[in-house]
Image (cartoon, rainbow, N blue to C red):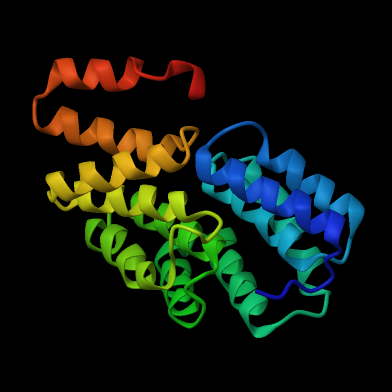
Length: 216
């Protein structure tokens, strides 16, 4: 993917923020801010900051996201980045279904855009759209491989979508694979825990959640 306005140093902070966001660890907002401090014209750093404040669903985050959106709109950007801007604009206005559809189209055109997948996945989650929780990620999966950076996050999202559509065995397999690749991936951890809960496997669930507490 190309990134308008980015430098090597700012892109490193951006990728750090994406990893933190995918795993639900540390402070991705601080990393996004660091990327912006390095390169104020880095479009996707502003977009990421907006998503983080919107998908956190805290009312105070809307004003921050609106300002990030405004700053990014003034910058040169690619069509892919413009689609993200459209999605953020929908979210700022509370149009979650429109944002989800915009990101669905973006992911069809750019299936390796991890941020589009995760933002869309979170929107599906908040909207209770179990079908899209699975299909949004499954559609992109063939373009990813174990050597692709961030592959664990795609598996974690797929596992949760499978669990939410009742495909428990596959969900457990995919979720466990996710955590094998990246023990810090809280979404994959959470997906397997859901499977064990839904199947009444209480002791296994306890063991799963206590198995590597230091990692998460």
